[in-house]
Image 1 (cartoon, rainbow, N blue to C red):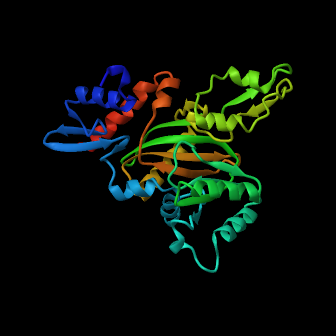
Image 2 (tube, one colour; image 1 turned 90 degrees about the vertical axis):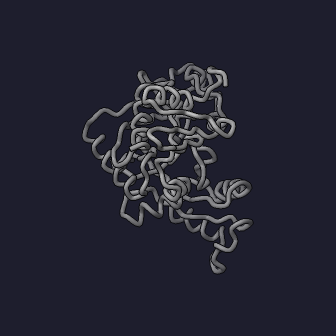
Image 3 (cartoon, helix red, strand yellow; image 1 turned 45 degrees about the vertical axis):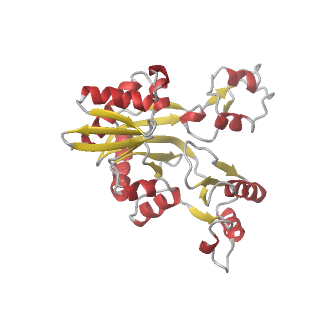
Length: 316
């Protein structure tokens, strides 16, 4: 593989293996990274590491399962309600209450503003905010074309979303995500202001922009969020959180969640609401930070240090 074509994670792991005297082999068309040291053999597939047991990884890959596990152990977590696809999961649906009865009941209970997402999604893809029953039904029907289960969640007014890097009972790094926004000058259209942001050319960004009236001229000082989501892939900005009282609170919750999940290496996303309450949003068993390394000064070394500690844990 040519160096300039090598994946970010492959390049980083290659560097660490050279520094840590670990033998690295690329197997199965480079899908598997096989690491050998001191007679021990470990594997990485895509961005999933041998640090985690399979059951923990599978729970983390299912948002509703994560919610159930964390809730059962009294970890503050965003509420989820499971909706089964009647085409593929009909045996899970109770006869006395169908899919739409559950969906409509949740919509009413949550004051006509809900978040709908696939249980196996990532990077904010296919996550929608619904304000009407029609939007809710259309969104669920669309998700059912590709997914066996979806979740309905309350909409939380989020001040900041944080990503924590968790390794075997410790948090190694925390950064906050600031949603992309523009501020009006009284002359420029929304489209002109957004052009100055240099947002990534990704579908999630195009979907967000399609919801805005680009010809609107904002008043001077008027602020408009480009998206209600905090994903870096959608143009959010990462800011490393320094040690303070909030760092300690977020760290404590991440450790609580990691231990409850029996997971050893993960990113644990936590939201801070405008009421200053903290909840676990999701746990990711696949650890990736490509965008962070490109947008934060010293980000590559910070992430490299996280992976170095993960490899140390892998061969401990």
